Image 1 (cartoon, rainbow, N blue to C red):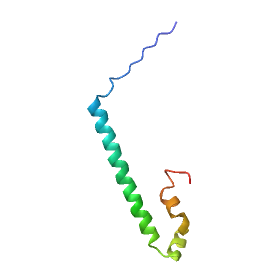
Image 2: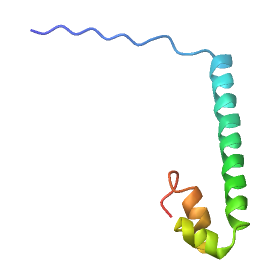
Image 3: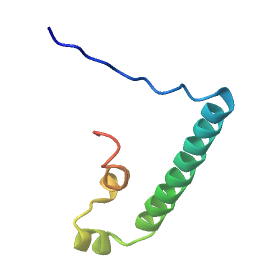
Image 4: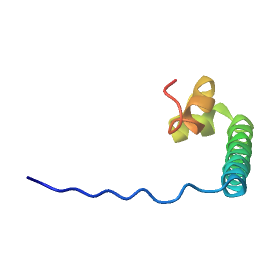
Amino acid sequence: MALTQSYQGAKPGFFSSLLDGLTRGVSQVAEANSRIHEVERLQAMSDEALAAKGIRRDEIVRHVFRDLYWL
């Protein structure tokens, strides 16, 4: 016969969960803002400069958000 024992830590309190959610939300907004700046920077480049980087103009958004979405 095998005996097992499991321990579940205490659930975080309401305010702790709220603060964690707000922190994650602010972090996501900041990251999205930096990505938007990257899109704008790439859009301001010439087609030749984009081609040198291996990016087509119609693929800029896909390139910037490639790690988040399958586009």
